[in-house]
Image (cartoon, rainbow, N blue to C red; front, side, top):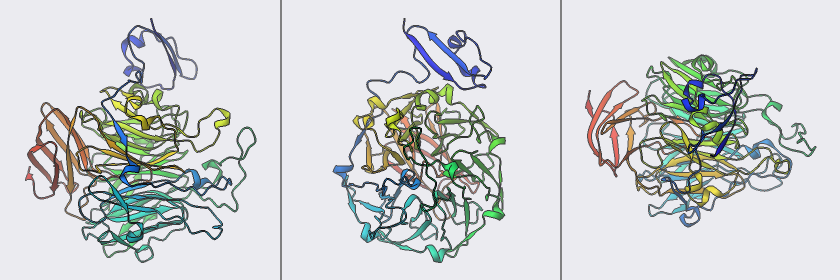
Length: 578
């Protein structure tokens, strides 16, 4: 009879979610409330399941053959400057309005003294619509800050073209799309110049006035000339932690509708101290049809800013159950993703976390409240041995359930002490009540160790499957072509009435007896911007009988009998009003 040793399960409130046959074998709780299990039962799997030899989820890495040789330059000179281990976002953006996503990679470079060398620019690759990309960085004119971090995409002036915002250490840039794949730097004119260390950013119409506002997470005050000397346990110099530097406040910019923005952080109520923000997501988290702001902070409570209307917000993270994990611990929050992973019609939340802590899953309970269900979902066991960054909730095998993709890699180089630095990425398949690590059967790429950071999802080749792009530190970028077997997808592009934005729109798709709920969010993942379309996995079904869209404006419309295998552009005002 096989013996399964289960690591310490650090939870107090999830015992009722543990299977009965396991509860009967529970020994006792110690005085810290930590449950230690030693289970012996035949033919059953543990919390995260045994890694399968093959998986319905399959990816093939194609960056080289697709013409994308990008490598993120950390600029490392053995000084252990903190930005070197934090950067690496990527954006999918249709910069030339041809209906196919192009790629923009943020880039780093030397920190402090430039030693007479030009800063390496961010790279822009134009989709050739034949499975390849062409480097058009010089034509696009989007070099980014001298040390770029992340990117966000949105039509800030309502002209129908996607604009690009790039964050960075002590700098950030807004590039206006002028058409034809060319951009112009309008940062100063737009009122968005900053000397802070900006990380993730997201666009959404937060005050519902018809144009896109901008939330920017800021990290900490790092100066290479005054940074302290930090050492590993063996005395060797290493990167300092975030606690060694003062936090910098986030910024909220209101779109004035004339090509400029106004900093309304203080009046909006988001200028809180001590955040060190890394991940940002905008969605209706509380069920009132207003876009709320979730911020994953590094080493302190995560924030949930509940929209009060009139561009005013109230921080309610702890009251809503998303500030800390289920044991009351602050997260080293990196990336964030949102989606209905349990199929109950309420979108949930996942946040990637530090090594030996595990990714955290917050289940939506209704009425805007959440709880940590990481243990019962298998995430605690599956992700404790990695440090997660970019994260996605997406249906990669088309079975109607949202799977989890995560890029991993440490920020402290202590491999000589037995702690891995480069780490393998992972894809966890949703099997209904738990996530199972399917990486071993998902393709050779998942066997590589890397310093994974930014991750975005989209359909590169318009075959209807969700593909993935990954940016890694001092390593080659990865384009993962989805070659999963079995399921099928319906791909939906939602186009709102104002600036084309559909952030906050929610879809209910009827597929036989099942109803799938998906929504458009602003931001998400880590430092990155995904394509923004919705992938509805329908299994073997040939179509969607009914698709209902609840727009942020309050309008509810339906479309009937949508065929699977195609891409459907649904514009607000064109459906049947309910």
